[in-house]
Image (cartoon, helix red, strand yellow):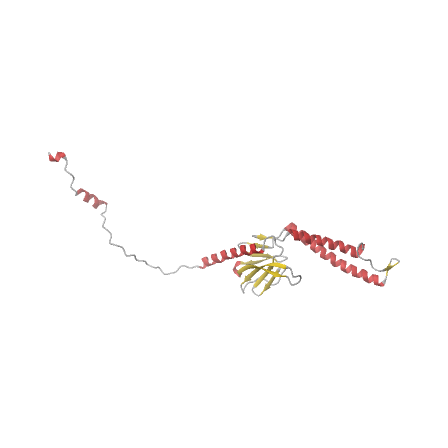
Length: 227
């Protein structure tokens, strides 16, 4: 099973990036909507020079943010890299630059939850992965947070519901654990002997004895013998 980021939200991020780039061009050069720096007869005053430096600083930050948003959204829309993969090897989570593989052998339980984001109060879905203490999974990464032996994966913009992903992952985990128990099972080394009481069997003659018994039987008398 695979889940991807929502294409609608990626498209919105791309539009926001374009708006930021356009706003940066207005702040730094055009001043179509923003106020230009103070000047006298076309010459910038001391205050205007300070305003111009501030506009260039803010405009540069907006350009960088817009390029990151637009470039990231276009890249994700074209490449369509899954945010989470459930397969036989384990649970692979997209953590930014590369995916993090959490092997089934290092997972104890998988569930889902809904939390309130601390910065804006919005409701966000999370995939909750309870790992073992010796799990080599790294700590905080992009869209991934670890608290002790529990990993929380942000799932608010997935194409699949986090409950469906959790059920599929838990089912695969249960299958892995059953197979591991089956492989570790060793049959008992002792050989048990079972004795069943039966009645004395009736002696049945073998083929040779059966023919002898048939010859000893008196043949019935015919009319020729009576004569």
